[in-house]
Image 1 (spheres, helix red, strand yellow):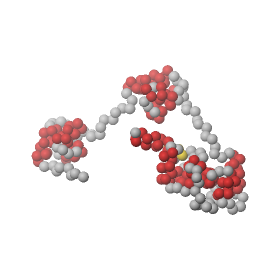
Image 2 (tube, rainbow, N blue to C red):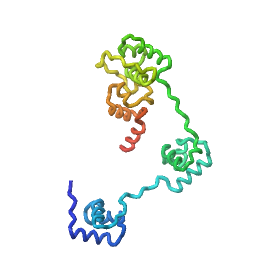
Image 3 (tube, rainbow, N blue to C red):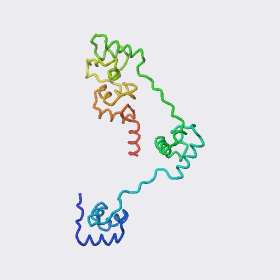
Image 4 (cartoon, rainbow, N blue to C red):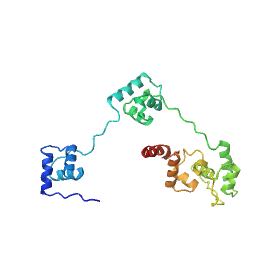
Length: 249
């Protein structure tokens, strides 16, 4: 790593000549002086302040995500089609489809026009366990008969990770407060199915619960969810996978 040149009388004189009488010294002037003196803009700005000169913020001007024309187009579309389109449909219809549904939602919220948007239909999640299956599992766990988790899984027609995950979720309810996860007979016999997939619907499960269910670390679970593009209650694997793919591209 190269060391920045030290400030001496000659370099200070060159710097003063470069900035002239400008006050406050603008970011563009600082950057130009840095090129002349073969140093960094940060070093130049610090030296100028040390010399008692006022320096403008070095933060680059934030580019507006939406121009006035963009805002006008979005407003016009919403007012012409009140409660007709969801955020996803609006995103596809305006601004050439350049904004995501989330970006459109944030902008509409800031413009206080949410009342003109059609509510997004709720996605009905298919339960991994029917009410009858839950009752059957609860009965086995509270019968007083000691069973290995493999036996329960076989009886239920489920994979071991799925059963373990379901029991974990049951322990978090008032009815299942006294339930514990049965011992596993054979830890060396690994399941051939994807352990995450075997858990079924994990949208309401926490990373910690999933980690316990499949005997992985929480960090490992997050990596697996991101790699597979799967969401759980406290980790959005799908969006993280999308961002990673975009960054790679």
